[in-house]
Amino acid sequence: MRLVRKNLVKSTRGLHSKQNGLLNFSDYKKRRNVFSYWALIALLIIFVLIALLPIFWLFVSSFKAPNEINSVNYTLFPKEWNFTQFIEIWEKCGLTDVFLNTFVVVIGAVICGVVFNSLLAYVIAILKPYGYKVVHTLVLLAYMIPSALAIYPLVKAIDNLHLLGTYIPLWFVFGANAYYYLLFKNYFEKMPKSLIEAARMDGLSNFRIFIKVILPLARPIIGVVAIFAMTAAYSDYLLPYMVIGNLKSENWTLMVAIFNFSSDKDVAPHILQLLVLSIIPQVIIFIIFQKQIMNTSVNSGMKE
Amino acid sequence: MALPLLLFVFFVWYPISFNVVLSFFNNEKFETFVGFNNYIAIFQDQDFLDALRNTFLYIFWSLIIGFLVPLILGFILSEAFHAKGFFRIAIYLPCMISGMAVVFLFKSMFGDNSWDVINVILIRWFGMKDGVEWTKDYHILIPVIVFAMTWRGAGGTALIYLSNFQQIDDAIYEAARIDGASPTQRFTKLTIPMMKTTIFMLLILQVIAVFQVFYEPMVIAGVDNNNAISLMLLSYSFAFVKKDSFERLQYSKSAATSVVLALIILAFTLLYFGLTRYFEKRAEAKSEGKL
Image (cartoon, rainbow over all chains, first blue to last red; front, side, top):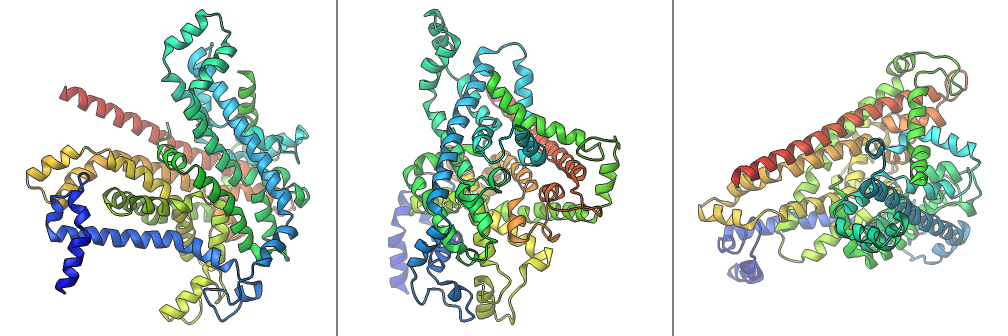
C-alpha cells in the first residue's frame, strides 16, 4: 500500500510544477486535490475511449467478410483478416472515378469559396459603394437561414439553367457563403487603411489593389476559408445528391456514392469498407494541417 | 461585385423568397392564392406535429447530452497536465470524419439485429435477452441520434471551451487562493461566472444547429419513420418523397414547413445576436467603470 502511494506521489511530481489553471502546484501539495486530479483524468480517459472506440471498431470490423459481420457468434476481431475485399469494393464502386470527381468538386469549391466571398467582402468592407449596408444585412440574413431549407426552389432554378447533372452548381454554391464572407470582411476591416491609400496614390485601380495589396496580406484568412471549404465540400451531401445523384455512378462524388450504394444490394454489406476508404483522405489532410485545423475550429465557434 | 452578388441571389435569396411566396399558394405553378391555408393544413397534419414534437425532443436531449459533455471536456482539458497533446487530438478526432460517414457508422453499430455490436454488448455484458430495436421508439431513437451528433461535434466545441477556460487570468485564481478559497469555491464563484457568457452563446448556437438536424434521422431512421423525423427532413420529404391523396408531391406544404422552421431559427439567431451585443456592452461598461 505504501509502495502504491509512493509511486502515485512520484508519478504526480509533474503536477508540482503546474503553474496555471484552477488548480496549480500549491493546491497539489494536498493529497486530496491530487486524487481529484486523477479522477478528472480518469473521466477524460473514459471520454477518449468513447471517442476512439467506434473508430477502432470500424477499422477492425472492416476487415470482416460480410457473412462474418452478420454472424450470430460475434467476435470483436475478424476470424480472417480479409484484405482483398477493399480492392473488390474499390473496383465494384469505381472509386477511382468517384475520388477524382470529389477532388474536382473540392478544388472548384475551394477556389469559388475564396475568390467570390473575398471579392464581395473587399467591396463591402473597403470600397463601400452606395447601398453596401443593405447588401451586408441581406447577406447576414442568409447566414441565419440554412440554405437546405429552400432546396426545392434551388434545384428547380438549377434545372431551368440546364445545369442539373453538372458540377458547376456544386462549385458556385461555395461562392455564396455568408460565413466565409464574414470571416473575410472582419479580416479586411482590421487591415491598415494607410496601405490602401498609398496604393491608390500610386494610381492602382480598385481591382489591382485587391490583387496586389489585399490578397497577399490576407493569406492567413485565405488558408482558414480554404480549409473550411475543403472539409465542407468533401462532406457535402444534400445539394450534390440533388444535382448529380441521378447520373451514372462514375459521375458521383464520394458522399453521394456512399448514400446511393448503401441501398445497393451488392455493395450494402461492404458499407464499412466504403466508410473506411472515405475517412482515409480526411485522416491524411488532418495529419498535414493538424495545427491549422485545430486552431480554426477554436475560432469557428466564435462566429461573428 | 456583381458576380458574387449574383451567386447570393441565385443560391440563397431567390430560393428563400420563392418558398415564402409559395407557402401562400396552392401549388408550385402559383395558380391560386390560398392565404394561410397551407399553414393551417400543416398544423393539422400528424406528420408535422410529430416532427415538431421530435424537434423539441432533439433540443431536450441535446441539452442533456450534447451541452454538458463538451463543457466538462473543455474544463478537464484545460486542467490536464499529462499528455495534453494526445488528449486534445484524441478528443478532436471524430470531428474530422464527415457527417455522412458518422451517421452510417452509428447506423451499423446501433442496428436492430441481435448481432449488431451494441446489442451484442447489451446481451453479453448486461444480460438482456434480446437486443433493443432502436428505430421503433422515439424515446430510444432520438437519444441515440443525439449521441451520434454529440460524438461527432463534442471535440470541436470542447476546444472552444478550452480556449476560453485558458483565457481566464491566473492572477484571479492566485488572489482567491491567497484569500483561502478552496478549489470548489474557486470553481463555483470564479470559473463558472466568468464562463457564463461563452456557455450561453454556445448553448444558443447549439440549439440553432439542432433545429437543422437532417441527415441523421434520414439515414438512421429513414425518411418515412415518424419516430425521428425533424422539421427540416419533413420539409424535404414533402417536396421529394411524400405524396398526397392525389399522388402529387406537396410543394406548398414543404414551403410552409420551411418558413415555420426558418422563423424559429431566425428568432433564436436574433436572440443570439442581441445577447452578444448586450454582453459586449456590459463588458465595456464594466471595464470603463474600472478605469
